[in-house]
Length: 357
Image (cartoon, rainbow, N blue to C red; front, side, top):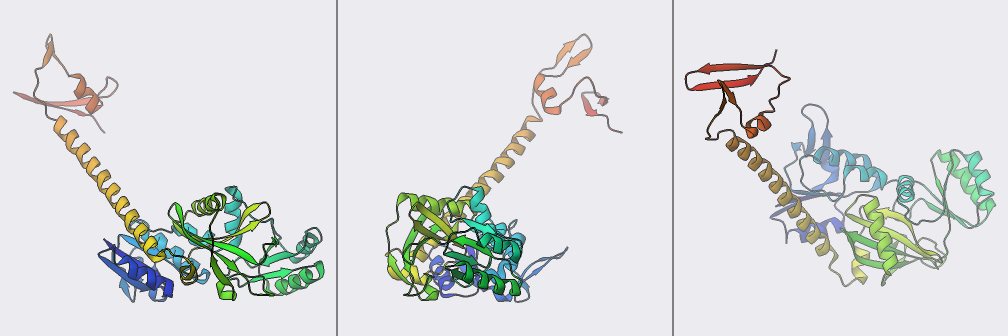
């Protein structure tokens, strides 16, 4: 089998691609920045000016800034690549926090109270009604960037004025007190293969490793595991990092990441995470290829069987000077008394065909 990892070349991508070589005959690490998508009759996906090779498995990764390109690549490859762990639509929905929360809402996934406002004036009215502190987020962003905290109406209103000047949409969300911690659960397929608790630095609310947070091994409850897996399933992705807060009333999903970093979680987890990902990609690709071959074989056998039934040695049944067709012949041909037919006859042979204008 032949696989490709298309990414920005992060250390996590390199780790995954190298490990995949244990399970695939060939693995290519391809730079997302050198990919082009061409539409039209001669369209396709091109790498360094040449049409992308055929692969059995393609693992696409990249930040939210490349969401449109990632979706375009996935859309062009979906009909030719047997397996991709992340479908095209997920690159649009998961890279946008607002769309992510809407999907969570549709699938009854628990999350903090979340508010969306069309403009600054209506948002300020909303700020008078919420409980503080609150979180304000840009729909796009990773590693904790674009996440702001306000502990009063005054501070929230000031942030709102700044956001209004930037002319960017934003999300308002209730703040869940967890002592500056959250959980990153890495879902691969139908299970959480690894998880760790991230703890924010002193005086810092964001627990992301890239924001200076630290990580520690944690054991997840069944409820948290179920929420993580249900979230990945709702977002239609087979590989995903799910960020969860353990609130007083249970786990709450705050974010999902299609390109989760592996360095931080690998430092604290005894699990060989790249190997878990590589094994899953290999197994799933084999399953899909095998299922496709079985389907093709089944269709071929049906055709062969149908062809075999077209010629049968049998006696003819006569009624007077008429020949009665056997039941299997009328069923196979679909002949009935409401249609017109042409008959071509010569000694020892005749052909009956449906009459068509």
